[in-house]
Length: 155
Image (cartoon, rainbow, N blue to C red):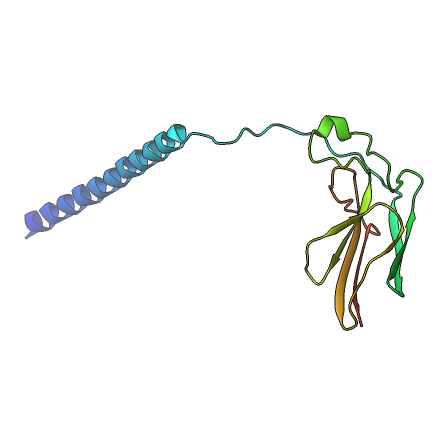
């Protein structure tokens, strides 16, 4: 009887070690396969580091009004001017607007309109609308600090 228990104990230990070594082998094989697949993947695009964009810490879109088909925005800040070229535009080499820095105006989730002055005519039908406006660099990158955008539901 003791021999039988001893034999079963040895057999159980052998099974445990066999099972553990199989998992280790399978995990190692899976990791090697994943590394090989990743190494064989051809990269379509090359990512390169980019310098942070020119900052406009004092730039703000203070107010927005619409009356008789005309928008009026108040843009403040010594460093930001509508219509001016953003100083780092040549280094960015992207979709730079020759007309300079501007306001992006989005109404009711429609495509944006770029406006280069703080007052402009733009027809908005009567009714309820959602309006988002934000100031942008000349290469269309938004300025992302507090006060650089206005979002309103208007009727």
